[in-house]
Length: 100
Image (tube, rainbow, N blue to C red; front, top):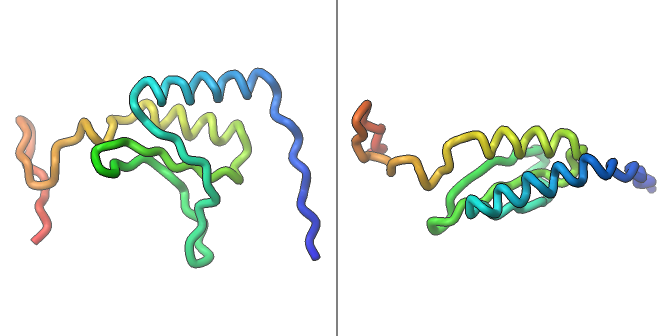
């Protein structure tokens, strides 16, 4: 039987930074989910999506805290899925592909 490795507790500074980013996400209406992102033996990256008009950000809880913080910063810097035009809608600059 495998023993589980005990993780070191993250530093208070990292915990504070993560809390700040989580609060920023909440202020933008983004719900954060920490789960084990694995399906059929494949480890998934995580990311942001829109479900019934609400933004959700999925993060693999097995990642180290510095990686979670970097991932969260990157995702918050991107355009929110709800701010993107719907598939098939035209914008000023280009038309989006509509699958047939």
